[in-house]
Length: 445
Image (cartoon, rainbow, N blue to C red; front, side):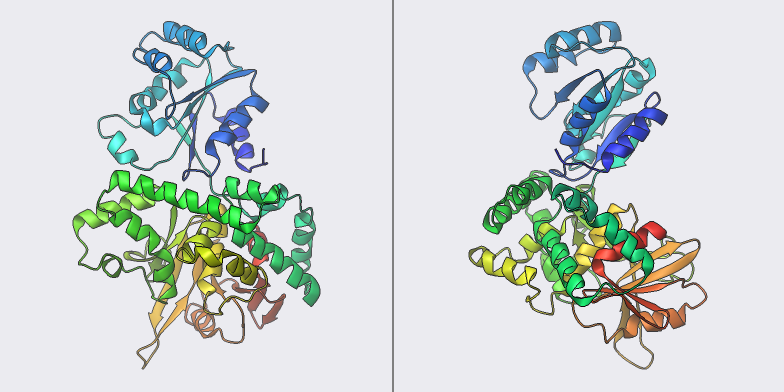
């Protein structure tokens, strides 16, 4: 069982909010929600009952036919589960809750009853279809569960250097060429494996990249099967599969009409909303006037998409090249992939920022007297100020966009970062950091 940061959030929920809210673990399928919930129940409660609505017996399902009389309901639940519940010391886990909308609606009354704690888990895919005729409970304390972030990955592989790396970051001194190359290779391993627990477990178990890649392909296939259950036309899966190619085309935004090969319809936009609800993708909005506010000036029709997990992105990127997986992974780990794959590092940055529970924004604007545009890859806000980030996979010599942004919005900019594989440095106010230090930058904002 891997240590996950969601445990700390669940503990805070139990101590502060458990008597008022059920915990709702949100996230894509296969990110570890069910495992986290059950392990937390083992650690923190005297007993627990897990009801998996994706694999439920007829006898257990019958228990939920009538929950009006809670005394009888809890007695029947304990008898069928073969578990004794203790008032104030037990938790009931409702796994894949989206499959049982009426049970989800009843959370309000179960929480108000006050006898036990409740944890809900489940993919949000097709959730809109399952909640049409129910009242969504307000008694849910939502906890996002992302793929394992870089620190969780380091815990999993028992790499003890993360705390020392944090201290090194705080010195603002160069790492040194040899050590930086080693640390970047460690980070590229994370990019190759990703943060899906099954893939991480395979890596920890010493599996080769053929096996790890097969696991990731199975997860992608699982997602696409889910997509086709919602949209049997295949457009939803098509939107998902097109993310790497849309980024590689060096476009300023994801162009749905190009992906589908036709004009975008209202139904296409509805399908796109389902893709976002699935939590399998990350959306970064183009903000039109970052000098005012990022969220208030975002253009909802201008955005980029990334995959929730960079390991899956790596696999999807080379989806049609399964026979040469070994060569691809060897090149990635040795930094010998084509230099135009900078968007692979962009996806890694998007994942890190999202894991810190921050939203994604970028900014483009036209150069004066030119048909070309500037683009800043990511923007974050901190204390009413803006911090721009530019991502480079290799050379750091050219950074015209971020420099122009710092001039244009000088009154609003507080710090500017160029993230790459290079060692710590700076050019005036522009701070240059290796990409593996991004989590520490975020901790300070």
